[in-house]
Length: 169
Image (tube, rainbow, N blue to C red; front, side, top):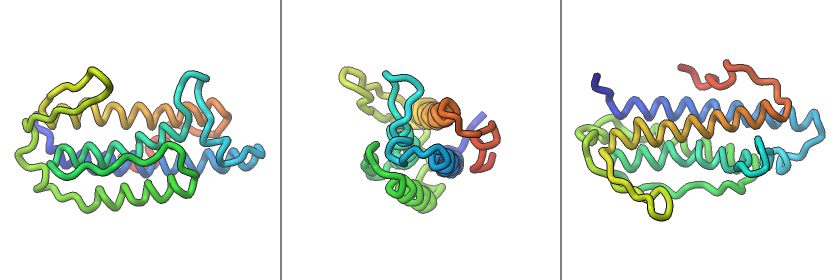
């Protein structure tokens, strides 16, 4: 089965809508509990895991960065994990605008284009662009979106599975 890489742009936009929705639900719950926005952004599942701010940084940055890499465009900088709520909301809106400007033809013929990306010190694999997008990028975006959901649930935010699909299917 051949998958058009441009379809990931829509998938990533829906992840951004879901992240914004989850952030709103977390904020509402935090306010009812007397928890500041900054403290909520520092919630974690467990002490040695990254907080909400980091999860949002990945969910907001990766869609634009990986779509750009695969389309052969300049790669935008990632956002800071230390933004405040207004900063994250603005970054989500900016990311959606960025993705909306990408055109299907920018992905044409890019499935097998080799990309070499340094993931961490000593890990710099080369894979076809389509594999990066369909495997690595998408898995990471949804891992961090799900982790955001899990952190919020662990802190008592009333969420259900439908909240994870707030951006649609």
